[in-house]
Image (cartoon, rainbow, N blue to C red):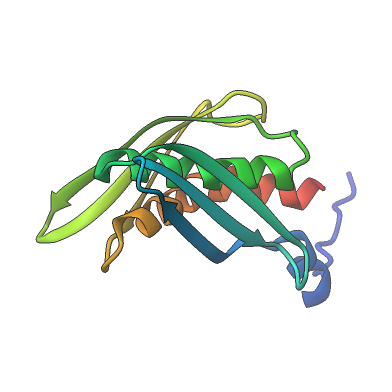
Length: 149
């Protein structure tokens, strides 16, 4: 029985396979009629950017949902529809003397866990925190998608 020797890969190969989507831009526009549009931009490599957008009624709670939806749409655009992600819910909670955003996501297409959960500490902007919570929740399945891309 022969054993295969482990061959370390170069840093360049590992970096390419282990690339991450990075949060690069965010905008929220509220109009006087009570509607809100959130756009999220993510970047995988220099210049390879994708945008997601979500529009709906504006309120402190609904704005969190719109931001999370916009982030999910950007991820789906990046995957050319190979990943199917649905927002189950988003919650702003106070825990351990800090504000935290928690998101629950259904993973309906990709292999792996069917439910994803992510959280982010809120420094100053809860809407921005919702985007970061989505990226935290999808990090592992997105990393696996990128590695096999």
